[in-house]
Amino acid sequence: MIDVRPFAELGHADHGWLDAKHHFSFADYYDPRRMHWGALRVWNDDAIAPGTGFGTHPHRDMEIITYVREGAITHRDNLGNSGRTEAGDVQVMSAGTGIMHSEYNREPGTTRIFQIWIMPDRAGHAPSWGTRSFPRGERGGGFVALASGYDADAGGDALPIHADARVLGATLKKGESAKYRLGVERMGYLVPAKGSVEIEGKTVGTRDGAAISETDTLVVRALDDAEIVLVDVAA
Image 1 (cartoon, rainbow, N blue to C red):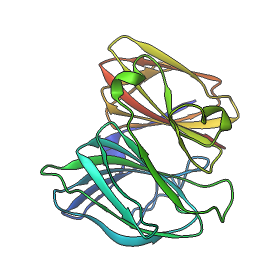
Image 2: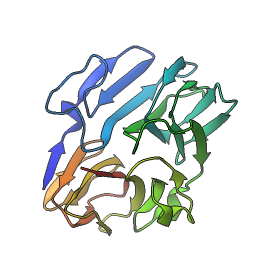
Image 3: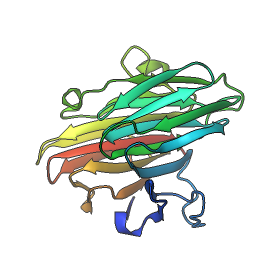
């Protein structure tokens, strides 16, 4: 089953320095029908103005994945971690027992990100942060795990998370298809960062959301050259 959630119908907050679209209830945007999708709690589509960002603030017991679409984000936290994650790359912050961090756009242009929050498998993990480069060319033609809670993905390049979940990426040329075995007991949420795709006869446009359930094998066909992010989570 595919429920397409058009970009124009998402929650919206314009703070001047931050223009945010919310796939799920977040901050002042509340929709009781869209509180979460399985263990997926937040999917924010953020545009951050140059020289601005999120000042130091706390998080706890949440797996926070940042997928950079354009520009770059600069991270700093109270564990001593700091780094810059640029377009095509991914960072993961496991908030665990508690972390204080900031995220700034130090670039000359607007930075655009997907910020994805997944509920952890349990409370009380040690906090951590990591970033990794995932060139788009390495995702051509199929889904690649970008962040994963599974040992089976540990030998690849996937960043570890403390969750029964995967975050995957794919880049497809127009007309190409990609398959992913989700499993009927699982839930998926897919957003094209660029381009549009077709799933089970339904069109999912750029930055639309597709809530996927009761689907064993997901087949995604690119209607244009497309860059896709998919989250696979426990129900």
